[in-house]
Length: 474
Image (cartoon, rainbow, N blue to C red; front, side, top):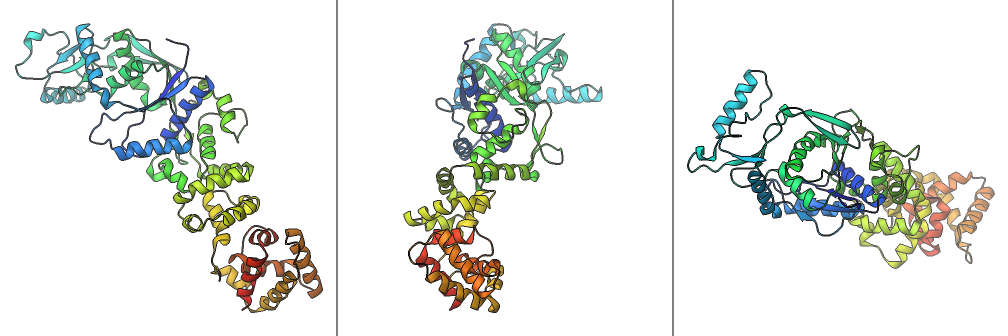
């Protein structure tokens, strides 16, 4: 085996890239980057009934959005069926596998007999040592591997340790069906060997498969890759993560306004840790990731923690970089259309100027879009309920006075200058600053909450600000 590490991510294209699959892809990607190796992508599309091109496209899109790139072209498992058949036939020639002519009725009978006797349903090996001359005419056989019948198979696992399986439980499973279609169990081994995969990192629900797959490796005299079976993700209630927990495809997390780096940071921390480090950059994760540091126990998915972490990443991010990601995500946000449709160079510059105040108040890009909507609103502004209350009768005279004070600011329309003018007006009129700032914010944004009101004045500019305030007085 060469020294270079080769990992692979091998999803089945039967739906979106779900969050558990994304974490498996991430761990493979991190380990390949950490060891300066490479990660390959294989689409396990042998189940023709359930595999779709749309699902494949969704998986590739999800991986691309997360930034988990792979080496070379994605490999289709289905396209390699001839090679899988070739290896199955080679195993028969080597005496390590054999044709099995048992009918479906015989197999049902076998299962029922085993259940009646309290044994696990296993194939009884009836064609294992029969002479091919006994084959019934006109029947296409399946091909079964000759599994060892005594002793045990040990899976040496980087996460789970040594896991032993009694060989009596690993029956002579099928590697090629009677219609000539290879089974998943067999195809995976041939593909991993041919693709030069050195490290298999996947969910611990594949542990029993690993024991069976080792039988094929041994039969062919191939090196067994390093195995690492990672624990599954559970919901907050401790049950395996499912749709009812909101275990959605990664495209749904994009629509909810999460940053790729924050989602990757959160997924990395599900089952793996580096000391007390919570907030990590991609560079940190690549530098620190070791398979041996993955926990054996299942991790629990917590939306509140993901949201808090996302907010931290947003606040730490450079404003221009955050704006760039925000713009690219707008078409996927349900409240992004207003901003996307009205983006211009001027609006973009205003948005960049407003970013420090906007990101302080937002934990997701959806909240950021919500906060930025005032920049893109058309005059006269539609008011939300609280803003309408703030602009009721008692505050009209105050707003009119504030407008006069701001109209007097002609040379320097900076937050400092507008604040000085409003403070002076409040003091002269015996008003608290909040009594002036609140209706002013409502008139400028149509809302009761926004970035600092003097920052809003600065971002909107003198002309637009005065016009919006005038609209509410008129």
